[in-house]
Length: 104
Image 1 (spheres, rainbow, N blue to C red):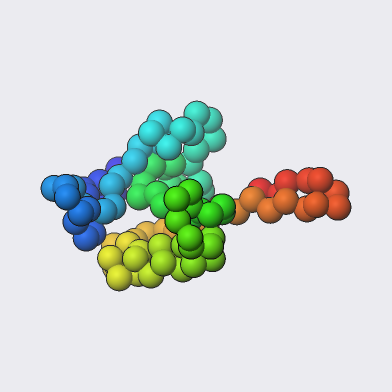
Image 2: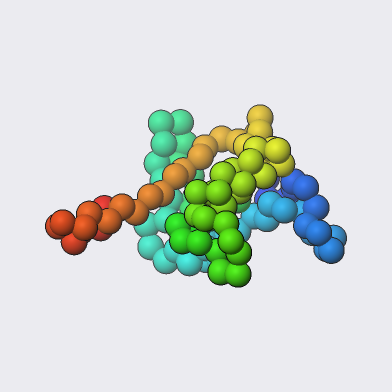
């Protein structure tokens, strides 16, 4: 694979590490069917992963929408997506209250 796995982005406060860390498929908890076939290539399950909160962050007064907007602004200013980004995958889980079904 020719993917870049080096840390990048703004430094983490109080640390020598950078904000964006590569995570392997195993570190992300995937066990089976982790790759995704695209039009030009097949992408393994590892990469630079960011989770946006769906619930308020404990110990803060921020609501979830404010927290997500702040996180997206940090990703944008830190160039999380740049010229070397080959693919971006978004996963959502939606709950339908009347039917009590989850849609992934």
